[in-house]
Length: 275
Image (tube, rainbow, N blue to C red; front, top):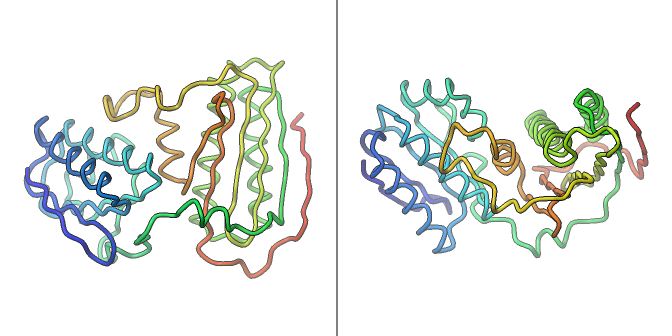
């Protein structure tokens, strides 16, 4: 397999040519992405028009590329998938992780030409909507907490794609906090603070566990079928920015809004305790 690169509209396009079946194919793609990130590139499209077969090595290469790009707050899209690669990603349920360009859609549509910078985040206006959700660490409470979060999002009049991404990331963060953070101990609580303005939605989820080192988690790069770490990769792929406190028991997720809503409830304050 060959990896050809070109710049198009401020986005780096990696065109793959051949079958993605051997380990050497996986290494070529991973090395190419790592090199480009080292050069400051952050926005990528992987053009798979000339890839007619996707094996396990190819899956690992794609997931590794996504992991590397997400860790540097970049963006990655798959485009021009042929039948076999599309079926493989669907069967392994990895199609949920990737931004996949639909047939006939411009491969650069909606792709950011430049990454979000720290200065841009600092310039976010004051938060104008807020809700706080707190619940004991039992699996049954996650659904009710997600319902409360969905009601909060409804008041923001977001587009459906952004609402879906936020709900999925929120659910994954809650599940990690209950299962891995608090070890499903009902005497320990999970607290989620959700704030929003006309520029972004920010969600912070905290548990009472011992915390962890997110960089030490075994990622899908080494084993795309390994369950542990899949939720964190999913969150990184859906959110624009993801960060942790020093202890590792609080995750903060930020999602930028593509445009200001028609209306937003101002100064909304809630505090909800599930059960």
